[in-house]
Length: 95
Figure 1 (cartoon, rainbow, N blue to C red):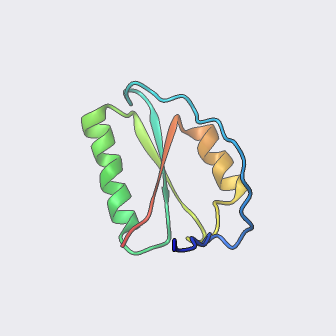
Figure 2 (cartoon, one colour):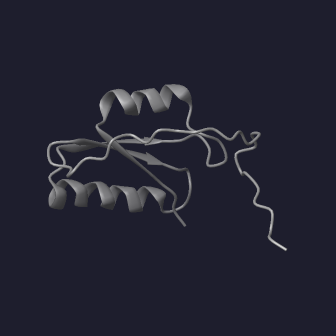
């Protein structure tokens, strides 16, 4: 019998269709948003990732922000800030 998977965000699951954003061919000249989770090593991982994206992939720079909680989605204001300032975004969890 399969195991039930629980949603850790504490919100009711709603099935909806989403359209994915178009994918870029490369990162040259882009500003990359790095959304950190308040977990151990998340900052270390994403800081190194940001450095590599600039050094090896040609990203113009990175904007780093941290979510208030791992258990809940990013606040609307935080998500909007990333959308306005960044061309692409990466969310990462540590440990």
